[in-house]
Length: 377
Image (cartoon, rainbow, N blue to C red; front, side, top):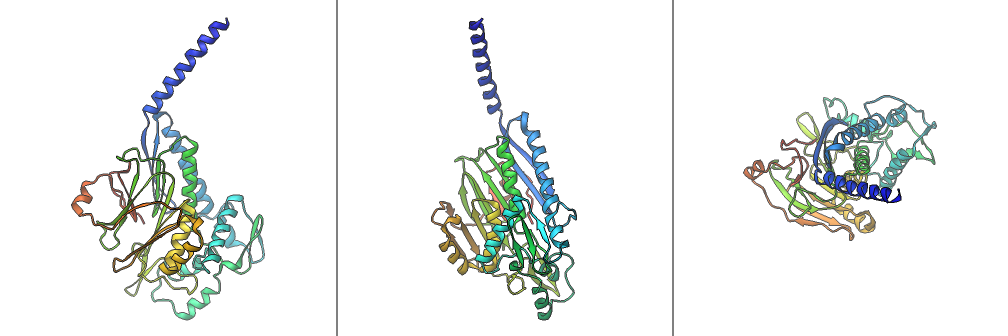
């Protein structure tokens, strides 16, 4: 009897090895594409056929959950933006652990940048028509000063399990929520056993593992030239876990009396950041951090950005900046190793021939990506 049990166990073991080998051998890339969070969501993940649909369902559930929780367009008790908007000054607003962590990080960056990044900037976005309808005329200095009185991260006090508004203000999570959600989507994929994947939402990218479709196993990131939309201004190669975010003024803007104003507002003076800083790209350990710092660095400009990076090498930041004169500057933390390929230009002919070129603020080349380009926001 014991010999039969041992023989059966041996056969089961052998079958399991063969079965797992078949599953691993059948692994390939799958696509999950949808429209959420006010933009296009493109996810490419490695899986075998048995689990691909289950992973897609989990990704959809994750997106729905966080859109309900953080979207400014949803009015519900589960939505933190709505709850803070409705709360009276002095009222305690309970927070769950992940929202507490997100807002704590945002508050820390606000302090470190002297308010260049500020989640209470929403009234200024409305004043300039970046949220809602653009005004007929440029806001006056008096109007901006009046709105600035309702802006200020120092008026949002974060306690142990809640926050308190010290003044009538609202919050805008556009600079942090998308990055945080991408990190959660990455966690969802990892929990389902996918080790090679790529997530793109708007101008944010998260990469994991080796690129199974490239010759050297690395992801090749192309940086779009903001002045020539069908050309690249440079590339860099990566493998492993990386988050990359670009903030730019050349795609999202409003026009008032024929004048163009970028969508990123300097919360310190209430004016849109001028277009000299057209493109800022940040590489960081998480998309949440990349999202926050790319916005902050866009407002601060290269000189102050370099100073912050030198003071905080633990940030693992790679920062690339281009202005309207095509001048590039990039800084990196000492811990960051990145193979940056000096700027070069790709012709439209080469661009159209490459069926694996994803167009957006950032582009991934030699990745398992849609053959039809989609222009990110």
